Image 1 (cartoon, rainbow, N blue to C red):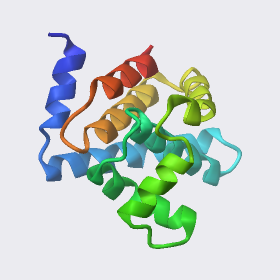
Image 2 (image 1 turned 60 degrees about the vertical axis):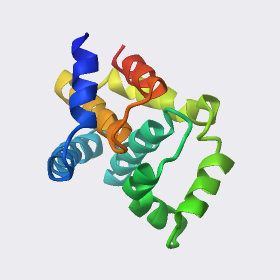
Image 3 (image 1 turned 60 degrees about the horizontal axis):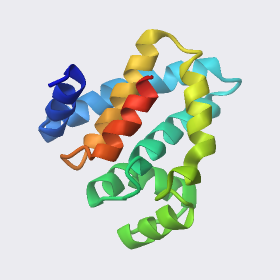
Image 4 (image 1 turned 180 degrees about the horizontal axis):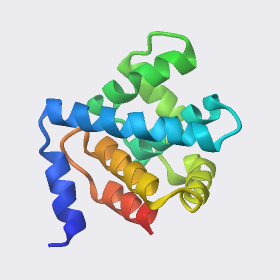
Length: 151
């Protein structure tokens, strides 16, 4: 078994406290770093949100756990208290169930990864892996998406 698959399995089995602590640690490092490399801080936050949304969309499904993770983002973006059904509708209406629906964001993300330090790149990849593992299982599609991100 590869180190990648072992890491995936470890992330899938994280308890809630450890998961939340890792998400907080990585997010608190990634957001300021992205904000520093953009002209304004807001762009850094938007890039972070794009990473999270693309990771959620990696397998073309929005699970309940993924919804809970991105609910604050959706609520702020849509200026409403977004329920799971509305989030699913938003997900499908915006093409997030198909790779071509978020291709432009992914192209931008891949370009950005080529510009940042290896440490920041590692943090971003781990953040994306955490997002994919939030429901306790990383699908084959999610694993393939992460591997493409690494490459």
